[in-house]
Image (cartoon, rainbow, N blue to C red):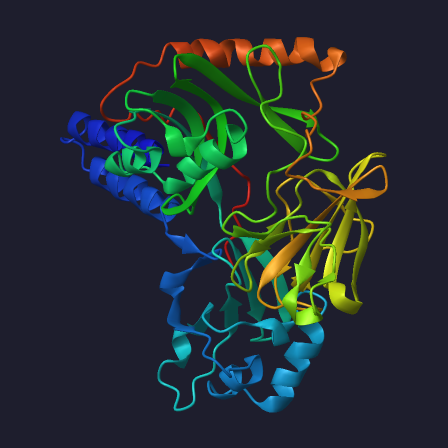
Length: 438
């Protein structure tokens, strides 16, 4: 848009200097400039806010949609009609404290003693917003702010740890998490990186409205030199219907295992699988523990440790609230004592998906998740199992994969290691989410 405006202004200026002896040039200049200004109007939520009186605020604890509108001179009968006509679009009872909202008034009402807004806009997230118009007829719709993705590259040489390296370069720590947890979790121990280890990465940053940074969207490819090994990683979609994608090396070998090491990112091993456990509270009677406990604060997200289908999501006895997942004919996993479940029976989940949150339901002496692991119908110790590798790329996809990564690998190889990161904005993709002007 800025380039388009610059070109337009350049044309106008050329026209002015080439026609300055002609009085009509001033008319043409004004016309062209007016068109540029019209084109460059700043829109928000699809509205030209220059045409309205704008009032912004945040939902306070205890606020309701009705109370907010009533405080701005909307009658309760109108509020009831709005609630009834918009319930199929959005349940306005679900507005949450801390979320911003905007009220738009016609400028003609600024002299009224009791001005009334014509539009209510609520933002449940940074990207999404709900618009309710009620000046004449009542209309409601949901939309999203324009989202753009900018592809970039970065390099780093480890002096201490990867987080510090990224911090010194002004890069997001999310990038470190993706490298450590999503890509190289099974091939590199990031707690034992060595000075001089180095990396290159091609990744995508996400922006909302072209200005609001929304974090690292994904990592397209990476290269890590560690202990003399050169470790490539390329993102590749293996199942477009289920949205499954993994990271593979240059020889099409999957970099991850079929199962995560633990179902929580931030927790500690508090009790191991132990068939000979005896507890003083129960008179030292034999009370086998067939699970592996990971202590974590209440509300900590619990992840599915592998792809699979939810077979149970319920509450029962000492297990409390739990989820059970069938991964294949051999393996199943179960996650006990949840505060709440996020998934229902029959849902297909991918490795790393959030399926619930740590709690203390059932028989639990403290906040933790009891992780149970079945192999051929028998509960076993996952920490002693030789877990299988993730499924390799099928032969039918291998040729496509190698063709896909060839130019990406060449690009990685041509990125030089610098003390400061290099950034490329050459590949910018913008979703077609621009709303119409109201």
